[in-house]
Length: 143
Image (cartoon, rainbow, N blue to C red; front, side, top):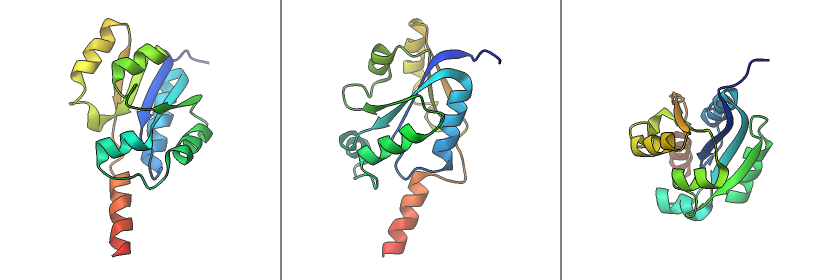
C-alpha cells in the first residue's frame, strides 16, 4: 500500500442536500490523507453565511457525513472554529481540503497554514451539480 501525502486531512463544508459533488470532495480528500476529519457547518453558521436556513438540519447532515466511508471523524463547525487557523489549532491537520471554487479567496489562509507546516489543496468543482442548483429546482417546483 502506497503512503499517502498527508497523515491528517480536514475538509469542512455545509453538506446541505448532500450530492455527488460532496462525495467527490470527501473521496478525493481521503485519497490524499490517512485520516480524514470532515467539518459540518452548524445551522447558525449556515444562516450567517448564506442568509437562509439549511434544508437538512445540522444533526442530520452530521449523521450523513459520519456515515460516509471516506470520513474517519465528523465534527461541528461553529463560529469558534470556522476560521481555518482556529480549526488547525483544534485538529492539527496536515492539509485543509476544499473545492476549487474557494482557491482565489483563501490565499492568505493557505500562506499562514504553510508557516505552521500544513497545506491547503483545492479539488476541481463538480460542475454538473451543486446544492444551489438543487435548492433552485426545489424552490421552482414549490411555486
